[in-house]
Length: 482
Ligand SMILES: Nc1ncnc2c1ncn2[C@@H]1O[C@H](COP(=O)(O)OP(=O)(O)OP(=O)(O)O)[C@@H](O)[C@H]1O
Ligand SMILES: [Mg+2]
Image (cartoon, rainbow, N blue to C red; front, top):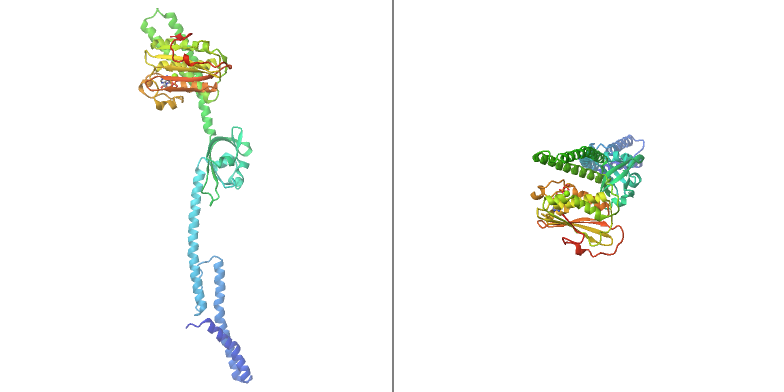
């Protein structure tokens, strides 16, 4: 039977207040009936009070248990009144809370395992990763970044990156405001704990979607020290091997030359031919070794050039003289068109400039068919002298021209590949000319010959010279013909 709480309260008030008042006022206090009525109403009032208070105690117990996190606590109240309805609602609420809590726990576990996975991936990456917030303070550092900087994640956490990780591009220090606000990719020196320097490749990216996560910038640090060490070892080895090869090769060429000269006419012409071919092969090998040594020096930034005012005309005459035989053998007319007045002095290194000129003229002869022409002419201005080596040879395909001055580049068509070469001559020539403060470039069309140009600074200021009249004329005053 359902008795409402209000009814219980009314019964309580009736038996605790009104019936005793009635008994005191209307009955004889000493009569047994009034005792019986008094005792009965006290008993009923106590019983009703007990019925009201008992569930309230259970409520207190349930609230305490819920507070302690026991969401499965069930409130067992069968008072058949509103308190039972409240208890049912309480149980429903606790049940729903338990489900939500369970869901939250599952999501928390999923998030934690996701985070562990990301942490493991980031830790396993061999490159250093540093994440910064919008104020350029460090929020994350992976293991590789810890080892590059020498600091732990705890030491770096929330600290300004510029305070701990100093980065230098050459002598200049670069700060986070420079590399974080743009896409940055550069080889720099990182100075970490105790001034330890590490060469790194730094790539940064701005995180545009980082507002919610408070991430502003990501730094990727690639340690280059091992690569640079290997590169240094490779260059050392190549340098040492080339030097060691050069000495015996020079000896072989010298001995062959002496032997050929002393025995010319004494030995059979077939044997002489074989000896001369051996000498040419040894010379080619020596030229290759010399080229490799030069490339090695360029890469170490040790290619010594000593510019001085030189008599360019004499240097050129000697270089062209040395190649006269090669041109003759191929039946190529080699023309050196000096201007009417002597060529002005240039600021250059005679040995290096001989290497450049020799390679350009040798190329022109090698890549021109017999019967063709190779012509060397000049354009003179007060500031610089431009040398033009033109040929009527096979020319260079348009798509090859941008790569022509790269290391080991050779045009891949069959007529070019037929000639021997390492693809280093133009790379070396470009390095030498730029070290001397000049420029080198080419104009060419496949099948229509090539023109290689290079400039050298004039040794002194001079009057402007109208030079065009010398270009393209085969025999000029003072021209040398081969
Ligand atoms: N005058 C030219 N005419 C046509 N092609 C040329 C000419 N000069 C250079 N080339 C092309 O450019 C390539 C690179 O020339 P480069 O002088 O660097 O190397 P190489 O002559 O092949 O070898 P080496 O290192 O012995 O000089 C050549 O292989 C050739 O394909
Ligand atoms: Mg060459």
